[in-house]
Amino acid sequence: MAMTAQEIETLILEGIPDAKVIITDLRGDGDHYKAEVIAASFAGKTRVQQHQMVYKALKGNMGEALHALQLETSIPT
Image (cartoon, rainbow, N blue to C red; front, side, top):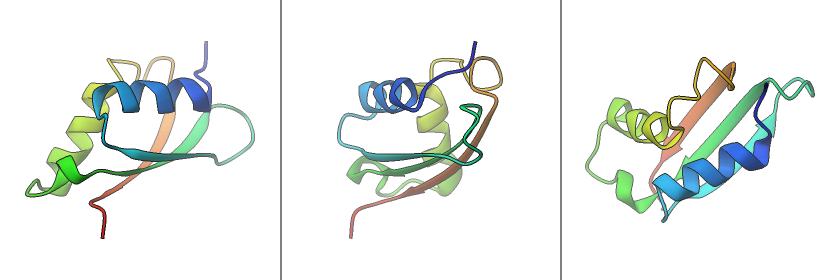
């Protein structure tokens, strides 16, 4: 069963409480999303480490309930 945008946002916020999360349904099919995650806790981390933090927050749902996720991470300016 696919995840909703709200479920994705909730998991990310639980794992990265200081994040601002913007979820976009790319195809309108509830299966292909873009997540923009902005968090001060990303400071000093590489892009790979930032993405790993998001994937960890998704608790193993990537590739299972969450089929496709285009991910953009950054620190607040």
